[in-house]
Figure 1 (cartoon, rainbow, N blue to C red):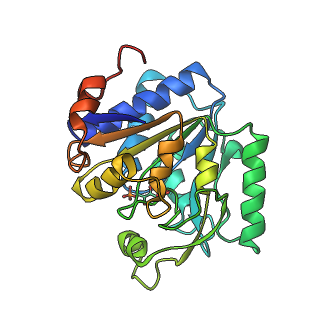
Figure 2: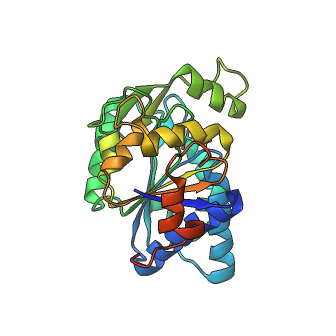
Figure 3: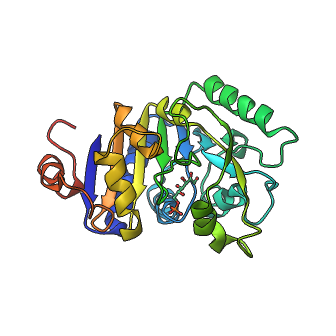
Length: 260
Ligand code: F6R
């Protein structure tokens, strides 16, 4: 696992944007795995800026988002479809026909989940998967105790996740209880993973993910099994780590090592 510690959120965001830009420039038809949430908003803003200023093009890319709330139609203001349109898709040249999110309003969410797995496979798998992390160690909506072998399916959200996401809904009661999410094994099957975590509230989960035991109790710790996982942190999110000297030694200021 590459651990890159950047001075602040802005620098962490730019570092993640560099990796996405490099991936898309090297392979314009890259398949991107996308995440939602507050952490990703500055990253998408940085990508939109690079599209406008530097001509970074998503015209040939395909995308698959990690998750969607069950019960929300794509045009619901709080759906992740709407989030993606507002944060990224409407502002870049991506072909909407090649953007994918699970259908939260599917008549049979499990059938929709199986079909989603098939679509990812048909696209040739995910080249670069972006991830955030929940305060409880979730990735996607794989809550603690999620099977490390799981594939896209229905998950029940924990109270803490619903409380964290309540800010986007009118009340806790209206915050969805269920989601369709890529599984941990779906995420691990992507060729590269880049997880971004910023702010002190993520410090404990980050420490468990990077230096804790591999355990379904912290689904993000499954990234320890991934051969190409990069974790991009700001100082505050890195605060709980014990081996910071080593990470700094390998990647000073979060930059590439001589062998990257
Ligand atoms: C969103 C997702 C979640 C978030 C995580 C962090 O698609 O899969 O795992 O990445 O809950 O959310 P923020 O960034 O809002 O703290």
